[in-house]
Amino acid sequence: MNSIDLYTASFWGILVMLLTWLIQGLVASTSKASQKGAVPGKIDQSLSHDSFVFRSHRTFMNSLENLPIMLGTSFLAVLMGANVFWTGVFIWVFAGARIVHMVLYYAIATETSPSPRSYFFLLGLLSNICLLVLCGLTLV
Image (tube, rainbow, N blue to C red; front, side, top):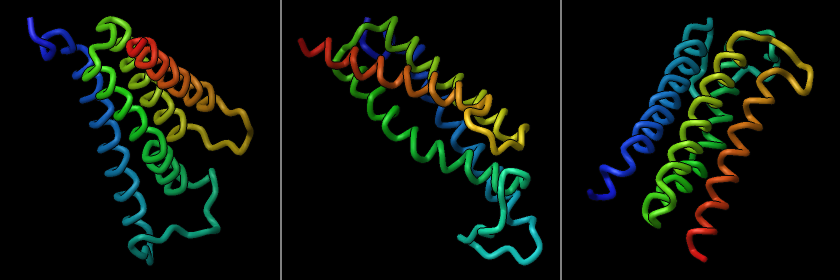
């Protein structure tokens, strides 16, 4: 069995992460473009969490800040031959956490910290850290 077959679950998780990221970008750009007087590339600085435009933009930007490191870690784990089971688990936990984070950010307009979405951000971060540790242990 080759490595592509072994890591099929991981690759599906990576696909879900990429699709989630794409959807977030589409939602953010569509919601912003629908605003009267929208200027490409600029977000009204007066917007806050009570605005869906703000929340969709922040959701996308948060993923833009978090997905590249997880994608790099995921591919590193696969290329290194890290444990197939745990690689898949950490990738899917991250993918699921990002989806729940997105839904909560879209649905709940709150300025409190931590907000419900913060826990799913932390769950995604923890899964990324665990996958990095797994990569390190694979080197040893």
